[in-house]
Length: 235
Image (cartoon, rainbow, N blue to C red; front, side):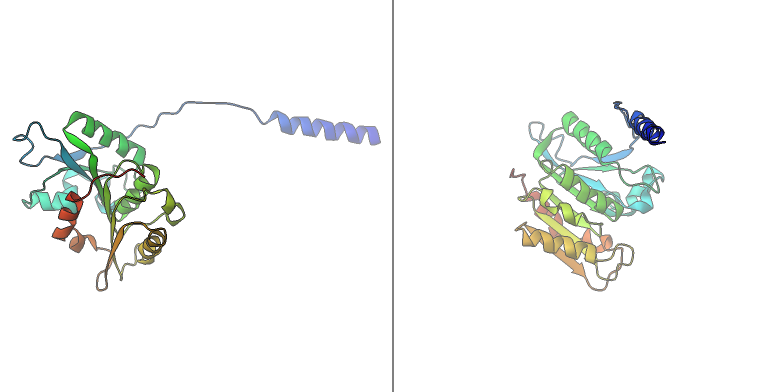
């Protein structure tokens, strides 16, 4: 009986071990991103110059819609209304209504646009609102050497990874105190953490605004002059 018991234990151990194998597979994930690309009026006139670029990521409401839906909020809305910017504006559309932004795909698009146009790589700016704001935070965490400055509106924040962000990159955060979709404490905790570590961060809290803080934030003219004052600084 003892021998039989030992045999069964040995067999069971071997069976369990045989189910653990080593393997490797190269995966390729593709994403179809439609986008708007705006050129400032001086772009063709100043053929020898490189220009700043603003990457804008929209919120969930425009995801999976017609491209025209991007013109309802943020810089694309202002452009549709006739506003002129001194930088290029790249505004991709997230194709999935109920998925997070694929930031690797966004980075591939950004790299392509930068390579094919006269873009100053030291003056690439980032902005996003709501779900796009959450993606903007993720981008500066995972690609800290890409952006010169970020303006983010009511996004979910990766507080535990705040220290991965380039410490010399200026950040301007906007949030509505009455936001019930992404509560303001997301931004408050992130801003507090960044300030604790000495990051150059500005926080604008709208006491009388809910989730749609972007309506006021993107009409703040000082934001765009603030962007133009920024140039990437490596840590």
